[in-house]
Length: 194
Image (cartoon, rainbow, N blue to C red; front, side, top):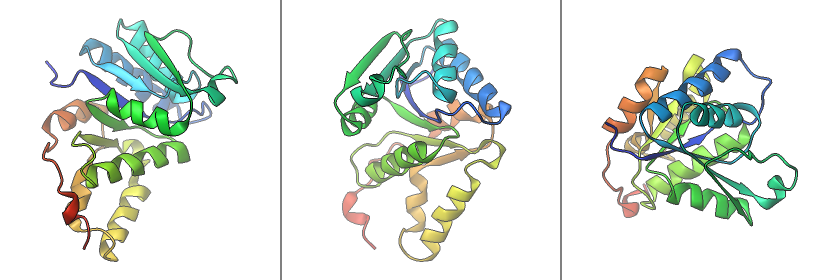
């Protein structure tokens, strides 16, 4: 039985991607439903976002979508979710996603996913939350990002311990155990500055 009840998943909205990433999103949705973990995500119906939401719902799970009205107005919203919140801005969306989630999972995605990942890492580093963050580096998708973090550390802009705000996994099977075993200490924001 999982200790988390809800998982925020950051992932791409493009459908023109590697079939393995689509399979990953589908299989992750099934795992969430089977483990009674509610999916919290950006509320869209396109790309990996739509695939994981559809999979959770198809397998009997629950999904909370949170989407800004300027995107919802373009009819990109997913209309078959357990609940859908239409909010005023991206900032409200991001805060609600954090508030509704016990942990975070980063699947392959574009600059929006990268933005959300960097922000949620920064919030953890600043002590705004103490929730696990797992980066699924499937097929080495996020390896350049991890390399960039190592470069930032080498250049003195982060401490080596700051990399511990995330757990990096290489397979689908490692995701839930990584969330369960992630350190849960609250970071002291005063220690952020080198």
